Image 1 (tube, helix red, strand yellow):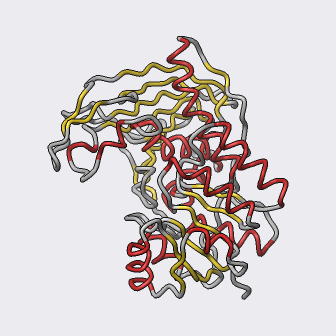
Image 2: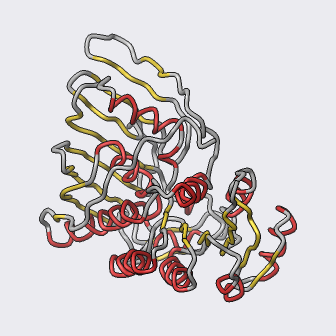
Length: 359
């Protein structure tokens, strides 16, 4: 089988699972890694037996590399994606696609002009759990979807993260940190979002990091609520919060249909459980997950895009989907600021259901 050669830029914590999994796919060859701190890249290269340790410039100029996996900090996502595309590389980037809508549009336009692919996390929707939910909906197991809810609420990363300052600055907060998982799951289950009505607040203007004792000034909303109208008429309600310190009993995601309800697993994971309760039944039933990719499968989006390139077909975690999620996240803030619904300009196609496994 022909192989796509992969280079990774950004060798932080999340890079480890990508490196581990990418090396397992027969059509991918991990040939290089780079980081602003050369020692960090060197350690990862030794840990995962990666042949080349490069500067960012060296990796981008390497003619042997087909795909750049961009695991840099969110503020650098757009710049690195654009540079990789300019160098003739396909790109897979961690979420979000870019820091602004304008930057996101530039990435998509550059890829289109150059005939290259852009893919973006989160790829968790490709896992066995959410794909099982997708199949249940398509098979009519809950009838026609009429409503949905998504809830991500806890006390915030200041309680555990060794360097939580950035979580409370623009471009982060619960919406941009965790929202992509929930919104991507909802869009791939229900289709694109038409409009959003939202409210936001900062409940605690200052936070104290438990690990370092640092006082953090909060400069981005930490409690975000929204009403979503999907293009197919389904209505959704969502909450993203770092302000719920006492716990809650709300589900991660539920989809309500004319004939029943599906409880969707945590969209930041790849597996289950998947629960269904049909009209007339007294109890929830757990649905057996017969699909692959239920463990931590980060890197599956890279593998699926590479296979799509080799097979000359559309890939699933694509740039249009990623841009629609970016557009939706900013729509929450636009709506809250103007105190009116915000119509989204973007649309995307719902990716095809995954095969049970790629190979």
